[in-house]
Amino acid sequence: MEKVPILVLVSVLLLVPTATAARTQDGSEDWGYVEVRPKAHMFWWLYRSPNKVKDPSKPWPIILWLQGGPGASGVGIGNFEEVGPLDTNLKPRNSTWLQKADLLFVDNPVGTGFSFVEDNALFVKNDVEAATDLTTLLKELFNRNESLQKSPLFIVAESYGGKFAATLGLSAIKAIEEGTLKLRLGGVALGDSWISPEDFVLSWGPLLKDVSRIDDDGLEKSNSVAQLIKQQIKDGKLEDATNSWSRLENLISAGSNHVDFYNFLLDSGMELVSVSVTTTEISPKKFTFTRYTRYLNSLRQSSLAPGGNGDLDTLLNGVIKRKLKIIPNNVTWGMQSDNVFEAMTGDFMRPRIDEVDQLLAKGVNVTIYNGQVDLICATKGTEAWIEKLKWDGLQQFLKKSRTPLYCGSDRRTRGFTRSYKNLHFYWILGAGHFVPVDQPCIALNMVADITQSPAAASAPHTST
Image 1 (cartoon, rainbow, N blue to C red):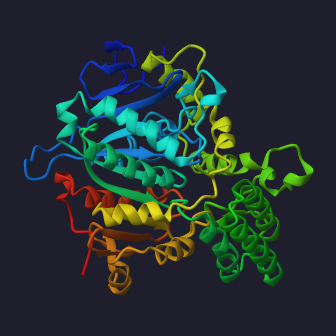
Image 2 (image 1 turned 90 degrees about the vertical axis):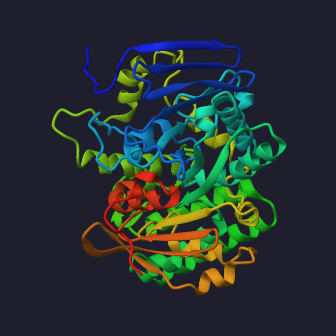
């Protein structure tokens, strides 16, 4: 029998008509299912920080982590690969965000990770439907728990999760205003987020040409397909735009000798991404999910301890499933993830700039952060969509000087930040798509700033 850190026997198993929940004996972790719609079950996992500071002037924050894909698991990837308390070897993570906040991981949309649907017609088709399900989950968790209601909730997203965060932010605000959700929304953070697909695909060619990864011919071909995608989005032909996006990714892979879309300083080194989807039976819509997981796998494999368990599928479907105890026997972690992506094809290329604008107009703190060497959600594209905001503080924000970022006493520049009113931007140097993986120290400092965590009183990490 495996000996796993912090895994203890379940002491509480609560069965109610729409929810199943369990917790550890010491109360440090809770997890469970919420039936967000009949036969649609969403899995969540809440970690309570051992570093929690009781400060009435600064309530202890909760971070809701939303993964991308769509179809990538926050309970798996965000938790064990990026910011949770344990890594994939079940060893303590020194840079866990649990130091600064409680962490709530959700497998969203339904069908992702341990979440599942009993009928394939129940997969969500767009970001708004996903936000509605998430709001239902938050009502179930927060409305009956006065302790949770005292903590501000910060929605922190990565990649496609940024689109979910923007729509969830608005859905949550509406529910709060209507009195149906008892929750304090602290803010929304969009990490390397797929907010405006048009601006990202238009950035790929020029960026790769500037860093010598493609030549003039590659730039011309890239720009041609990117302009086609722009027109398809404008015409509302979003499924066509998704197919063109897949074609553009493969064109760039061929022209760049397989650049890694999650760190343009690296090669992907994967045969699958170098094969034209027009000559295979592989669905182009599955390519992004494959790339998304393989980049993290390559990072993990380079740092596995001898004898360690680095296989995320094995970990989640083995030790973790046995710990959780409430996962149905016929549910395998990630078994419906491809279906989730497939169902959202028609919304994948839809921009969510307007939703970010609405959050800003309502006074919500919006933080945007981007890794310097990310390609899929390149900083160049992020800056382009920010300039499209109609928010009345935009021009003042763009004129503000940036502040350099450091880690502790190390005076090497790790990034820059700029803020004006409720809009904040972090440029994270040396990081690709997965900022907490590539730059864990600066990411932890950043999240302390975002949440204003009472535990954030450490060595100075910014300079004016």
